[in-house]
Image 1 (cartoon, one colour):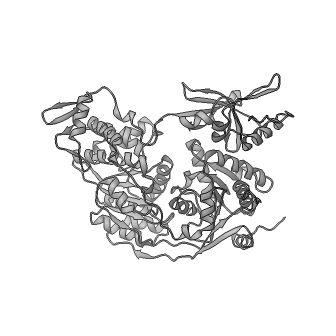
Image 2 (cartoon, one colour; image 1 turned 120 degrees about the vertical axis):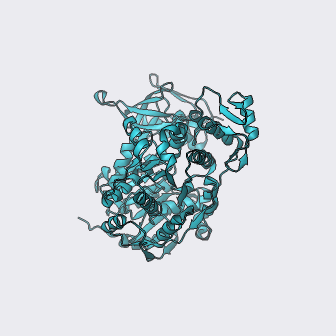
Image 3 (cartoon, one colour; image 1 turned 60 degrees about the vertical axis):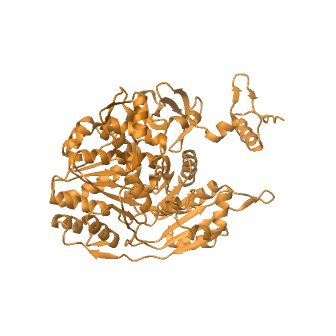
Length: 612
Protein backbone atom coordinates (compact mmCIF):
# COMPACT_ATOMS: atom_id res chain seq x y z
CA UNK A 1 0.00 0.00 0.00
CA UNK A 2 1.43 3.37 -1.03
CA UNK A 3 2.21 5.88 1.69
CA UNK A 4 -0.09 8.91 1.75
CA UNK A 5 1.70 12.16 0.98
CA UNK A 6 1.26 15.28 3.08
CA UNK A 7 0.05 18.56 1.60
CA UNK A 8 3.59 19.96 1.86
CA UNK A 9 4.96 17.05 -0.20
CA UNK A 10 2.21 17.44 -2.81
CA UNK A 11 2.95 21.17 -3.06
CA UNK A 12 6.61 20.37 -3.72
CA UNK A 13 5.60 17.89 -6.44
CA UNK A 14 3.33 20.49 -8.01
CA UNK A 15 6.11 23.08 -8.26
CA UNK A 16 7.75 20.98 -10.99
CA UNK A 17 4.60 21.03 -13.16
CA UNK A 18 5.31 22.86 -16.43
CA UNK A 19 1.73 24.14 -16.64
CA UNK A 20 2.19 26.43 -13.63
CA UNK A 21 2.11 30.03 -14.92
CA UNK A 22 2.40 31.88 -11.62
CA UNK A 23 3.07 30.87 -8.02
CA UNK A 24 2.34 33.47 -5.34
CA UNK A 25 3.07 32.67 -1.72
CA UNK A 26 1.13 34.58 0.92
CA UNK A 27 3.04 34.64 4.20
CA UNK A 28 1.40 33.51 7.44
CA UNK A 29 0.20 36.18 9.84
CA UNK A 30 0.16 36.15 13.63
CA UNK A 31 -2.96 37.04 15.58
CA UNK A 32 -3.39 40.56 16.97
CA UNK A 33 -5.43 40.46 20.17
CA UNK A 34 -6.74 42.60 23.01
CA UNK A 35 -8.13 41.61 26.42
CA UNK A 36 -11.87 41.03 26.73
CA UNK A 37 -13.36 44.36 27.98
CA UNK A 38 -14.28 44.52 31.66
CA UNK A 39 -17.81 45.61 30.77
CA UNK A 40 -18.57 42.17 29.27
CA UNK A 41 -20.89 40.07 31.45
CA UNK A 42 -18.97 37.41 33.46
CA UNK A 43 -21.28 34.68 32.13
CA UNK A 44 -20.29 35.58 28.55
CA UNK A 45 -16.60 35.57 29.52
CA UNK A 46 -17.06 32.15 31.13
CA UNK A 47 -18.61 30.82 27.89
CA UNK A 48 -15.70 32.21 25.88
CA UNK A 49 -13.15 30.60 28.20
CA UNK A 50 -14.88 27.23 27.80
CA UNK A 51 -14.38 27.62 24.05
CA UNK A 52 -10.71 28.50 24.47
CA UNK A 53 -11.19 32.22 23.76
CA UNK A 54 -9.13 34.13 26.27
CA UNK A 55 -8.81 37.32 24.22
CA UNK A 56 -10.52 39.09 21.32
CA UNK A 57 -9.05 39.82 17.93
CA UNK A 58 -8.48 43.53 17.41
CA UNK A 59 -11.42 43.93 14.99
CA UNK A 60 -13.76 42.14 17.42
CA UNK A 61 -12.63 44.40 20.26
CA UNK A 62 -13.04 47.57 18.17
CA UNK A 63 -16.47 46.47 16.95
CA UNK A 64 -17.70 45.84 20.49
CA UNK A 65 -16.41 49.16 21.85
CA UNK A 66 -17.80 51.13 18.88
CA UNK A 67 -21.28 49.58 19.11
CA UNK A 68 -21.32 50.24 22.86
CA UNK A 69 -20.78 53.91 22.05
CA UNK A 70 -23.95 53.87 19.98
CA UNK A 71 -22.41 53.89 16.49
CA UNK A 72 -23.46 51.84 13.48
CA UNK A 73 -20.59 49.73 12.15
CA UNK A 74 -19.53 47.75 9.09
CA UNK A 75 -16.78 45.20 9.83
CA UNK A 76 -14.75 44.08 6.80
CA UNK A 77 -12.26 41.24 7.23
CA UNK A 78 -11.35 38.10 5.24
CA UNK A 79 -13.14 34.74 5.38
CA UNK A 80 -12.85 32.83 8.69
CA UNK A 81 -11.60 35.83 10.67
CA UNK A 82 -14.27 35.72 13.40
CA UNK A 83 -16.64 38.39 12.07
CA UNK A 84 -19.56 36.61 13.76
CA UNK A 85 -18.39 37.77 17.18
CA UNK A 86 -18.48 41.39 15.98
CA UNK A 87 -22.28 41.21 16.31
CA UNK A 88 -22.88 38.29 18.69
CA UNK A 89 -20.88 39.86 21.54
CA UNK A 90 -22.70 43.25 21.70
CA UNK A 91 -26.08 41.57 21.15
CA UNK A 92 -25.57 38.98 23.91
CA UNK A 93 -24.23 41.70 26.24
CA UNK A 94 -27.32 43.88 25.64
CA UNK A 95 -29.69 40.98 26.41
CA UNK A 96 -27.65 39.97 29.49
CA UNK A 97 -28.08 43.54 30.79
CA UNK A 98 -31.75 43.85 29.83
CA UNK A 99 -33.90 40.78 29.22
CA UNK A 100 -36.33 42.89 27.20
CA UNK A 101 -33.76 43.69 24.46
CA UNK A 102 -34.33 42.21 21.02
CA UNK A 103 -32.15 41.71 17.93
CA UNK A 104 -32.92 40.91 14.30
CA UNK A 105 -30.32 39.00 12.23
CA UNK A 106 -30.52 39.10 8.41
CA UNK A 107 -28.63 36.51 6.33
CA UNK A 108 -28.89 36.26 2.54
CA UNK A 109 -29.62 32.50 2.60
CA UNK A 110 -31.42 30.00 4.85
CA UNK A 111 -28.26 27.86 4.98
CA UNK A 112 -26.28 30.69 6.57
CA UNK A 113 -29.07 31.42 9.02
CA UNK A 114 -29.19 27.78 10.18
CA UNK A 115 -25.40 27.66 10.46
CA UNK A 116 -25.21 30.82 12.57
CA UNK A 117 -28.08 29.71 14.79
CA UNK A 118 -26.15 26.57 15.74
CA UNK A 119 -23.04 28.53 16.71
CA UNK A 120 -25.05 31.14 18.61
CA UNK A 121 -27.01 28.52 20.57
CA UNK A 122 -23.77 26.79 21.56
CA UNK A 123 -22.51 30.02 23.15
CA UNK A 124 -25.88 30.69 24.83
CA UNK A 125 -25.99 27.20 26.37
CA UNK A 126 -22.50 27.71 27.82
CA UNK A 127 -23.50 31.12 29.21
CA UNK A 128 -26.31 29.66 31.31
CA UNK A 129 -28.68 32.55 30.47
CA UNK A 130 -32.21 31.99 29.20
CA UNK A 131 -31.75 33.70 25.82
CA UNK A 132 -34.08 32.44 23.12
CA UNK A 133 -32.82 32.55 19.53
CA UNK A 134 -34.86 31.20 16.63
CA UNK A 135 -34.69 31.04 12.87
CA UNK A 136 -37.78 32.33 11.09
CA UNK A 137 -38.00 31.20 7.49
CA UNK A 138 -40.18 29.18 5.13
CA UNK A 139 -39.30 25.94 6.96
CA UNK A 140 -40.46 27.21 10.38
CA UNK A 141 -43.63 25.44 11.56
CA UNK A 142 -46.73 27.53 12.49
CA UNK A 143 -46.47 26.53 16.17
CA UNK A 144 -42.84 27.69 16.39
CA UNK A 145 -43.65 30.93 14.54
CA UNK A 146 -45.99 31.99 17.35
CA UNK A 147 -43.26 31.36 19.94
CA UNK A 148 -40.69 33.29 17.89
CA UNK A 149 -42.99 36.32 17.64
CA UNK A 150 -43.81 36.39 21.33
CA UNK A 151 -40.60 35.47 23.17
CA UNK A 152 -37.68 35.41 20.70
CA UNK A 153 -34.76 37.54 21.91
CA UNK A 154 -32.86 37.00 18.66
CA UNK A 155 -34.82 36.43 15.44
CA UNK A 156 -32.69 35.03 12.60
CA UNK A 157 -34.21 35.41 9.14
CA UNK A 158 -33.54 36.45 5.53
CA UNK A 159 -34.61 39.52 3.53
CA UNK A 160 -37.31 37.59 1.67
CA UNK A 161 -39.09 36.57 4.89
CA UNK A 162 -38.70 40.06 6.34
CA UNK A 163 -40.25 41.50 3.18
CA UNK A 164 -43.18 39.12 2.75
CA UNK A 165 -43.93 37.56 6.17
CA UNK A 166 -42.74 39.89 8.94
CA UNK A 167 -43.19 43.53 7.88
CA UNK A 168 -46.72 43.11 6.40
CA UNK A 169 -47.80 41.44 9.67
CA UNK A 170 -45.92 43.75 12.06
CA UNK A 171 -48.85 43.92 14.49
CA UNK A 172 -48.02 40.32 15.46
CA UNK A 173 -44.42 41.38 16.16
CA UNK A 174 -45.00 44.19 18.66
CA UNK A 175 -42.61 42.63 21.19
CA UNK A 176 -39.79 42.57 18.62
CA UNK A 177 -40.23 45.99 17.03
CA UNK A 178 -40.88 47.93 20.22
CA UNK A 179 -37.72 46.55 21.88
CA UNK A 180 -35.41 46.21 18.87
CA UNK A 181 -31.87 47.27 19.80
CA UNK A 182 -29.78 45.82 16.97
CA UNK A 183 -30.24 44.87 13.31
CA UNK A 184 -27.45 42.64 12.02
CA UNK A 185 -26.80 42.41 8.26
CA UNK A 186 -24.28 39.67 7.47
CA UNK A 187 -22.53 39.07 4.12
CA UNK A 188 -23.17 42.69 3.14
CA UNK A 189 -21.29 42.28 -0.17
CA UNK A 190 -24.05 40.00 -1.52
CA UNK A 191 -26.54 42.89 -1.46
CA UNK A 192 -25.67 44.40 -4.81
CA UNK A 193 -27.45 45.07 -8.08
CA UNK A 194 -31.20 44.49 -8.25
CA UNK A 195 -31.24 42.32 -5.11
CA UNK A 196 -29.39 44.96 -3.08
CA UNK A 197 -31.65 47.72 -4.42
CA UNK A 198 -34.71 45.75 -3.29
CA UNK A 199 -33.22 45.05 0.15
CA UNK A 200 -32.35 48.75 0.68
CA UNK A 201 -36.06 49.52 0.27
CA UNK A 202 -37.01 46.66 2.61
CA UNK A 203 -34.69 48.25 5.22
CA UNK A 204 -36.48 51.59 4.70
CA UNK A 205 -39.78 49.86 5.44
CA UNK A 206 -38.24 48.16 8.49
CA UNK A 207 -36.96 51.47 9.90
CA UNK A 208 -40.38 53.04 9.32
CA UNK A 209 -42.08 50.35 11.40
CA UNK A 210 -39.42 50.59 14.14
CA UNK A 211 -40.10 54.34 14.36
CA UNK A 212 -43.84 53.64 14.64
CA UNK A 213 -43.21 51.35 17.64
CA UNK A 214 -40.73 53.74 19.26
CA UNK A 215 -37.41 51.93 18.67
CA UNK A 216 -34.26 53.17 16.94
CA UNK A 217 -31.99 50.15 16.45
CA UNK A 218 -28.29 50.25 15.61
CA UNK A 219 -27.02 48.49 12.49
CA UNK A 220 -24.13 46.02 12.66
CA UNK A 221 -22.98 44.97 9.19
CA UNK A 222 -20.24 42.52 8.24
CA UNK A 223 -18.77 41.95 4.81
CA UNK A 224 -16.06 40.20 2.86
CA UNK A 225 -13.55 42.50 1.20
CA UNK A 226 -15.07 44.88 -1.37
CA UNK A 227 -13.88 48.28 -2.57
CA UNK A 228 -16.69 50.35 -1.02
CA UNK A 229 -18.05 48.65 2.14
CA UNK A 230 -18.79 51.89 4.02
CA UNK A 231 -20.60 53.44 1.03
CA UNK A 232 -22.64 50.27 0.42
CA UNK A 233 -23.62 49.95 4.09
CA UNK A 234 -24.75 53.58 4.21
CA UNK A 235 -26.77 53.21 0.99
CA UNK A 236 -28.35 50.00 2.22
CA UNK A 237 -29.28 51.21 5.72
CA UNK A 238 -29.59 54.97 5.23
CA UNK A 239 -27.44 55.49 8.36
CA UNK A 240 -23.87 56.83 8.81
CA UNK A 241 -21.39 53.99 9.32
CA UNK A 242 -18.07 53.45 11.05
CA UNK A 243 -15.71 51.20 9.04
CA UNK A 244 -13.79 48.55 11.01
CA UNK A 245 -11.13 46.78 8.96
CA UNK A 246 -8.25 46.23 11.41
CA UNK A 247 -8.20 42.45 10.94
CA UNK A 248 -6.52 40.74 13.90
CA UNK A 249 -7.21 37.10 12.96
CA UNK A 250 -4.25 34.80 12.25
CA UNK A 251 -3.77 33.09 8.91
CA UNK A 252 -1.54 30.25 7.74
CA UNK A 253 0.76 30.15 4.73
CA UNK A 254 -1.22 30.15 1.50
CA UNK A 255 0.01 29.18 -1.97
CA UNK A 256 -1.99 30.85 -4.77
CA UNK A 257 -1.24 29.09 -8.07
CA UNK A 258 -2.32 29.91 -11.65
CA UNK A 259 -2.44 26.75 -13.76
CA UNK A 260 -2.78 26.87 -17.56
CA UNK A 261 -3.64 23.57 -19.30
CA UNK A 262 -1.29 22.50 -22.13
CA UNK A 263 -1.99 23.45 -25.76
CA UNK A 264 -3.45 20.56 -27.77
CA UNK A 265 -3.96 22.41 -31.09
CA UNK A 266 -1.20 24.91 -31.89
CA UNK A 267 -2.71 26.41 -35.09
CA UNK A 268 -5.94 27.25 -33.23
CA UNK A 269 -4.19 27.83 -29.88
CA UNK A 270 -6.67 25.49 -28.17
CA UNK A 271 -5.84 24.15 -24.74
CA UNK A 272 -6.78 20.98 -22.95
CA UNK A 273 -10.13 21.14 -21.16
CA UNK A 274 -9.90 22.83 -17.77
CA UNK A 275 -12.43 20.30 -16.48
CA UNK A 276 -10.16 17.37 -17.33
CA UNK A 277 -7.20 19.05 -15.61
CA UNK A 278 -9.30 19.83 -12.53
CA UNK A 279 -10.36 16.19 -12.29
CA UNK A 280 -6.76 14.97 -12.33
CA UNK A 281 -5.53 17.60 -9.87
CA UNK A 282 -8.38 16.87 -7.45
CA UNK A 283 -7.66 13.15 -7.66
CA UNK A 284 -4.05 13.68 -6.46
CA UNK A 285 -5.17 15.48 -3.32
CA UNK A 286 -8.21 13.35 -2.52
CA UNK A 287 -6.40 10.01 -2.86
CA UNK A 288 -3.87 11.34 -0.34
CA UNK A 289 -6.72 12.17 2.06
CA UNK A 290 -6.31 15.95 1.68
CA UNK A 291 -9.70 17.65 2.18
CA UNK A 292 -10.45 19.58 -1.01
CA UNK A 293 -13.11 21.89 -2.43
CA UNK A 294 -13.61 22.29 -6.19
CA UNK A 295 -15.55 25.29 -7.50
CA UNK A 296 -17.37 25.24 -10.85
CA UNK A 297 -19.32 28.01 -12.52
CA UNK A 298 -22.62 26.26 -13.25
CA UNK A 299 -24.85 23.58 -11.76
CA UNK A 300 -24.38 21.27 -14.73
CA UNK A 301 -20.59 21.66 -14.59
CA UNK A 302 -20.66 20.76 -10.89
CA UNK A 303 -22.43 17.50 -11.65
CA UNK A 304 -20.08 16.63 -14.54
CA UNK A 305 -16.95 17.21 -12.46
CA UNK A 306 -18.47 15.36 -9.51
CA UNK A 307 -19.26 12.25 -11.57
CA UNK A 308 -15.78 12.24 -13.14
CA UNK A 309 -13.94 12.64 -9.83
CA UNK A 310 -16.08 9.96 -8.18
CA UNK A 311 -15.14 7.59 -11.00
CA UNK A 312 -11.43 8.45 -10.67
CA UNK A 313 -11.22 7.87 -6.90
CA UNK A 314 -13.80 5.14 -6.32
CA UNK A 315 -11.17 2.41 -5.81
CA UNK A 316 -9.05 4.44 -3.37
CA UNK A 317 -11.55 6.29 -1.15
CA UNK A 318 -15.02 5.42 -2.51
CA UNK A 319 -17.60 7.66 -4.15
CA UNK A 320 -19.42 8.62 -0.92
CA UNK A 321 -16.41 10.68 0.20
CA UNK A 322 -16.99 13.14 -2.67
CA UNK A 323 -20.20 15.15 -2.75
CA UNK A 324 -21.76 17.93 -4.79
CA UNK A 325 -23.22 21.15 -3.38
CA UNK A 326 -25.34 23.61 -5.38
CA UNK A 327 -28.68 25.33 -5.66
CA UNK A 328 -31.47 22.79 -6.16
CA UNK A 329 -30.36 20.35 -3.46
CA UNK A 330 -32.84 19.95 -0.63
CA UNK A 331 -32.09 21.69 2.69
CA UNK A 332 -31.55 18.46 4.66
CA UNK A 333 -29.15 17.23 1.97
CA UNK A 334 -27.12 20.43 2.22
CA UNK A 335 -26.97 20.24 6.03
CA UNK A 336 -25.77 16.63 5.77
CA UNK A 337 -22.96 17.65 3.40
CA UNK A 338 -21.93 20.57 5.63
CA UNK A 339 -21.77 18.26 8.68
CA UNK A 340 -19.75 15.70 6.73
CA UNK A 341 -17.19 18.35 5.75
CA UNK A 342 -16.89 19.61 9.33
CA UNK A 343 -16.38 16.18 10.90
CA UNK A 344 -14.16 14.86 8.11
CA UNK A 345 -16.48 12.14 6.79
CA UNK A 346 -16.51 13.94 3.43
CA UNK A 347 -13.08 14.48 1.88
CA UNK A 348 -14.11 16.51 -1.15
CA UNK A 349 -16.93 18.73 -2.33
CA UNK A 350 -17.68 20.12 -5.78
CA UNK A 351 -19.68 23.33 -5.52
CA UNK A 352 -21.02 26.36 -7.31
CA UNK A 353 -20.49 29.72 -5.61
CA UNK A 354 -23.14 28.56 -3.08
CA UNK A 355 -20.22 27.78 -0.72
CA UNK A 356 -18.56 31.16 -1.25
CA UNK A 357 -20.53 32.53 1.70
CA UNK A 358 -19.52 31.96 5.29
CA UNK A 359 -21.17 28.59 5.95
CA UNK A 360 -18.92 26.69 8.37
CA UNK A 361 -17.49 23.76 6.42
CA UNK A 362 -14.46 23.01 8.53
CA UNK A 363 -10.74 23.01 7.80
CA UNK A 364 -10.37 22.50 4.05
CA UNK A 365 -6.76 22.47 2.86
CA UNK A 366 -7.07 22.80 -0.93
CA UNK A 367 -9.30 24.95 -3.14
CA UNK A 368 -9.43 24.32 -6.91
CA UNK A 369 -11.30 26.76 -9.16
CA UNK A 370 -12.51 25.66 -12.59
CA UNK A 371 -11.81 28.89 -14.42
CA UNK A 372 -11.79 32.49 -13.21
CA UNK A 373 -14.92 33.08 -11.05
CA UNK A 374 -15.64 36.36 -12.82
CA UNK A 375 -14.55 38.94 -10.25
CA UNK A 376 -11.61 39.62 -7.95
CA UNK A 377 -13.89 39.66 -4.91
CA UNK A 378 -15.45 36.29 -5.75
CA UNK A 379 -12.02 34.75 -6.39
CA UNK A 380 -10.74 35.79 -2.96
CA UNK A 381 -13.97 34.55 -1.36
CA UNK A 382 -13.52 31.11 -2.90
CA UNK A 383 -9.82 31.07 -2.05
CA UNK A 384 -10.72 31.84 1.55
CA UNK A 385 -12.51 28.49 1.91
CA UNK A 386 -9.11 26.77 2.21
CA UNK A 387 -6.71 27.25 5.12
CA UNK A 388 -8.98 28.64 7.77
CA UNK A 389 -6.77 30.38 10.37
CA UNK A 390 -3.97 27.86 10.78
CA UNK A 391 -1.87 25.53 8.69
CA UNK A 392 -0.73 25.53 5.09
CA UNK A 393 -3.24 25.87 2.25
CA UNK A 394 -3.18 25.64 -1.52
CA UNK A 395 -5.39 27.53 -3.98
CA UNK A 396 -5.32 26.45 -7.64
CA UNK A 397 -7.04 28.41 -10.38
CA UNK A 398 -7.19 26.31 -13.56
CA UNK A 399 -7.74 28.53 -16.59
CA UNK A 400 -10.19 27.72 -19.36
CA UNK A 401 -9.78 28.70 -23.03
CA UNK A 402 -11.80 31.90 -22.63
CA UNK A 403 -9.97 35.20 -23.27
CA UNK A 404 -10.59 36.54 -19.76
CA UNK A 405 -9.15 33.41 -18.13
CA UNK A 406 -6.09 33.52 -20.39
CA UNK A 407 -5.56 37.22 -19.66
CA UNK A 408 -5.78 36.73 -15.90
CA UNK A 409 -3.30 33.83 -15.68
CA UNK A 410 -0.83 35.45 -18.07
CA UNK A 411 -1.02 38.83 -16.34
CA UNK A 412 -1.06 37.87 -12.64
CA UNK A 413 -0.22 41.42 -11.54
CA UNK A 414 -3.66 42.50 -12.84
CA UNK A 415 -5.26 40.20 -10.25
CA UNK A 416 -2.88 40.51 -7.29
CA UNK A 417 -2.37 44.29 -7.53
CA UNK A 418 -6.06 45.05 -8.01
CA UNK A 419 -8.54 45.81 -5.23
CA UNK A 420 -11.87 43.94 -5.23
CA UNK A 421 -14.71 45.48 -7.18
CA UNK A 422 -17.20 48.00 -5.81
CA UNK A 423 -20.75 46.86 -5.07
CA UNK A 424 -23.39 49.11 -6.60
CA UNK A 425 -27.10 49.50 -5.82
CA UNK A 426 -29.79 51.94 -6.92
CA UNK A 427 -32.64 52.00 -4.36
CA UNK A 428 -34.22 54.93 -6.25
CA UNK A 429 -34.85 52.84 -9.36
CA UNK A 430 -38.43 53.87 -10.08
CA UNK A 431 -39.81 50.37 -10.75
CA UNK A 432 -38.31 49.00 -7.53
CA UNK A 433 -39.17 52.09 -5.48
CA UNK A 434 -42.86 52.15 -6.48
CA UNK A 435 -43.25 48.47 -5.60
CA UNK A 436 -41.89 49.02 -2.10
CA UNK A 437 -43.90 52.18 -1.50
CA UNK A 438 -46.99 50.08 -2.25
CA UNK A 439 -45.77 47.50 0.31
CA UNK A 440 -44.98 50.22 2.85
CA UNK A 441 -48.42 51.83 2.42
CA UNK A 442 -50.06 48.45 3.10
CA UNK A 443 -48.03 48.22 6.35
CA UNK A 444 -48.60 51.79 7.58
CA UNK A 445 -50.39 54.84 6.08
CA UNK A 446 -48.20 57.61 4.67
CA UNK A 447 -48.49 61.18 5.93
CA UNK A 448 -48.27 63.99 3.39
CA UNK A 449 -44.67 65.24 3.25
CA UNK A 450 -43.29 62.00 4.73
CA UNK A 451 -40.06 60.81 3.14
CA UNK A 452 -39.18 57.26 2.19
CA UNK A 453 -35.47 57.02 2.83
CA UNK A 454 -34.14 60.41 1.81
CA UNK A 455 -36.47 61.20 -1.08
CA UNK A 456 -39.79 63.00 -1.45
CA UNK A 457 -42.49 60.61 -2.62
CA UNK A 458 -45.63 62.74 -2.81
CA UNK A 459 -45.73 62.39 -6.61
CA UNK A 460 -45.60 58.60 -6.35
CA UNK A 461 -48.32 58.58 -3.67
CA UNK A 462 -50.59 60.73 -5.85
CA UNK A 463 -49.92 58.43 -8.81
CA UNK A 464 -50.97 55.43 -6.69
CA UNK A 465 -54.13 57.29 -5.72
CA UNK A 466 -54.92 57.76 -9.42
CA UNK A 467 -54.32 54.04 -9.95
CA UNK A 468 -56.78 53.33 -7.11
CA UNK A 469 -54.13 51.56 -5.06
CA UNK A 470 -54.23 54.23 -2.31
CA UNK A 471 -56.92 56.58 -1.10
CA UNK A 472 -56.36 60.12 0.16
CA UNK A 473 -58.09 61.43 3.31
CA UNK A 474 -56.89 64.71 4.78
CA UNK A 475 -53.10 64.62 4.88
CA UNK A 476 -52.92 60.80 5.01
CA UNK A 477 -52.62 58.17 2.25
CA UNK A 478 -54.26 54.83 3.07
CA UNK A 479 -54.08 51.42 1.37
CA UNK A 480 -57.24 50.89 -0.70
CA UNK A 481 -56.74 47.69 -2.64
CA UNK A 482 -57.69 44.05 -2.14
CA UNK A 483 -54.23 42.78 -3.21
CA UNK A 484 -51.42 41.75 -0.85
CA UNK A 485 -48.56 43.73 -2.45
CA UNK A 486 -45.57 41.88 -0.93
CA UNK A 487 -46.61 38.64 -2.64
CA UNK A 488 -46.30 40.37 -6.02
CA UNK A 489 -42.73 41.59 -5.45
CA UNK A 490 -39.81 39.15 -5.65
CA UNK A 491 -36.51 40.45 -4.26
CA UNK A 492 -34.40 38.07 -6.34
CA UNK A 493 -36.12 37.07 -9.57
CA UNK A 494 -39.28 37.36 -11.59
CA UNK A 495 -40.33 33.78 -10.81
CA UNK A 496 -41.03 32.94 -7.19
CA UNK A 497 -42.01 29.28 -7.45
CA UNK A 498 -39.53 26.48 -8.14
CA UNK A 499 -40.18 23.26 -10.02
CA UNK A 500 -39.99 20.25 -7.68
CA UNK A 501 -38.05 17.23 -9.01
CA UNK A 502 -39.63 13.88 -8.09
CA UNK A 503 -37.72 10.60 -8.44
CA UNK A 504 -40.01 7.69 -9.23
CA UNK A 505 -37.30 5.09 -9.96
CA UNK A 506 -38.75 2.87 -7.26
CA UNK A 507 -42.53 2.71 -7.31
CA UNK A 508 -42.68 2.03 -3.58
CA UNK A 509 -40.33 4.85 -2.68
CA UNK A 510 -41.25 7.94 -4.70
CA UNK A 511 -39.34 10.92 -3.27
CA UNK A 512 -38.42 14.54 -3.91
CA UNK A 513 -34.72 14.87 -4.73
CA UNK A 514 -34.38 18.55 -5.60
CA UNK A 515 -35.83 21.70 -7.11
CA UNK A 516 -35.04 24.16 -9.90
CA UNK A 517 -36.10 27.69 -10.77
CA UNK A 518 -38.72 27.91 -13.50
CA UNK A 519 -36.51 29.60 -16.09
CA UNK A 520 -33.79 26.92 -15.86
CA UNK A 521 -36.42 24.17 -15.87
CA UNK A 522 -37.44 25.15 -19.40
CA UNK A 523 -34.08 24.06 -20.80
CA UNK A 524 -32.90 21.46 -18.27
CA UNK A 525 -36.09 19.65 -17.19
CA UNK A 526 -38.07 19.35 -20.41
CA UNK A 527 -39.49 15.94 -21.35
CA UNK A 528 -36.72 13.35 -22.03
CA UNK A 529 -33.96 15.66 -20.76
CA UNK A 530 -31.11 14.02 -18.82
CA UNK A 531 -30.82 15.70 -15.43
CA UNK A 532 -27.73 15.23 -13.24
CA UNK A 533 -28.08 15.08 -9.46
CA UNK A 534 -25.20 14.11 -7.14
CA UNK A 535 -23.43 12.58 -10.14
CA UNK A 536 -26.41 10.32 -10.97
CA UNK A 537 -28.33 10.60 -14.26
CA UNK A 538 -32.10 10.90 -14.32
CA UNK A 539 -34.32 11.09 -17.39
CA UNK A 540 -37.27 13.47 -17.21
CA UNK A 541 -40.40 11.46 -18.00
CA UNK A 542 -42.78 14.38 -17.67
CA UNK A 543 -42.58 18.09 -16.84
CA UNK A 544 -45.92 19.07 -15.33
CA UNK A 545 -45.72 22.82 -15.83
CA UNK A 546 -49.13 23.60 -14.32
CA UNK A 547 -48.32 21.90 -11.02
CA UNK A 548 -44.57 22.80 -11.05
CA UNK A 549 -43.40 19.18 -10.90
CA UNK A 550 -40.85 17.21 -12.93
CA UNK A 551 -41.07 13.42 -12.76
CA UNK A 552 -37.72 11.68 -13.31
CA UNK A 553 -36.36 8.14 -13.33
CA UNK A 554 -32.75 7.01 -12.81
CA UNK A 555 -30.98 5.89 -15.99
CA UNK A 556 -27.46 4.77 -16.94
CA UNK A 557 -26.36 6.79 -19.96
CA UNK A 558 -23.21 8.70 -20.84
CA UNK A 559 -24.68 12.01 -21.88
CA UNK A 560 -26.63 14.84 -20.30
CA UNK A 561 -28.73 17.89 -21.17
CA UNK A 562 -26.92 21.22 -21.29
CA UNK A 563 -28.88 24.47 -21.44
CA UNK A 564 -26.54 26.10 -23.98
CA UNK A 565 -26.60 23.10 -26.31
CA UNK A 566 -30.36 22.84 -25.94
CA UNK A 567 -30.71 26.38 -27.20
CA UNK A 568 -28.18 25.93 -30.01
CA UNK A 569 -29.37 22.60 -31.32
CA UNK A 570 -33.09 23.34 -30.83
CA UNK A 571 -34.52 20.21 -32.42
CA UNK A 572 -33.20 16.70 -32.79
CA UNK A 573 -35.97 14.21 -33.44
CA UNK A 574 -35.18 10.51 -33.52
CA UNK A 575 -37.67 7.89 -34.62
CA UNK A 576 -36.54 4.90 -32.57
CA UNK A 577 -38.88 2.54 -34.41
CA UNK A 578 -37.44 3.05 -37.91
CA UNK A 579 -34.06 4.30 -36.68
CA UNK A 580 -34.38 7.41 -38.81
CA UNK A 581 -33.02 10.71 -37.65
CA UNK A 582 -33.99 14.17 -38.82
CA UNK A 583 -32.36 17.50 -38.09
CA UNK A 584 -34.05 20.85 -38.50
CA UNK A 585 -31.24 23.37 -38.08
CA UNK A 586 -27.76 24.09 -39.39
CA UNK A 587 -24.96 22.65 -37.26
CA UNK A 588 -21.50 23.99 -36.56
CA UNK A 589 -18.53 21.64 -36.16
CA UNK A 590 -18.94 21.36 -32.39
CA UNK A 591 -22.59 20.42 -32.73
CA UNK A 592 -21.84 17.89 -35.48
CA UNK A 593 -19.17 16.22 -33.33
CA UNK A 594 -21.56 16.12 -30.39
CA UNK A 595 -24.36 14.57 -32.45
CA UNK A 596 -21.98 12.09 -34.06
CA UNK A 597 -20.94 10.92 -30.60
CA UNK A 598 -24.56 10.60 -29.51
CA UNK A 599 -25.55 8.51 -32.55
CA UNK A 600 -22.61 6.18 -31.97
CA UNK A 601 -23.74 5.66 -28.38
CA UNK A 602 -27.14 4.46 -29.59
CA UNK A 603 -25.61 2.26 -32.33
CA UNK A 604 -26.28 4.40 -35.37
CA UNK A 605 -23.51 3.81 -37.85
CA UNK A 606 -23.98 6.86 -40.09
CA UNK A 607 -22.73 10.37 -39.31
CA UNK A 608 -25.25 13.21 -38.98
CA UNK A 609 -25.51 15.09 -42.22
CA UNK A 610 -23.96 18.53 -42.55
CA UNK A 611 -26.35 21.09 -43.97
CA UNK A 612 -25.14 23.88 -46.14
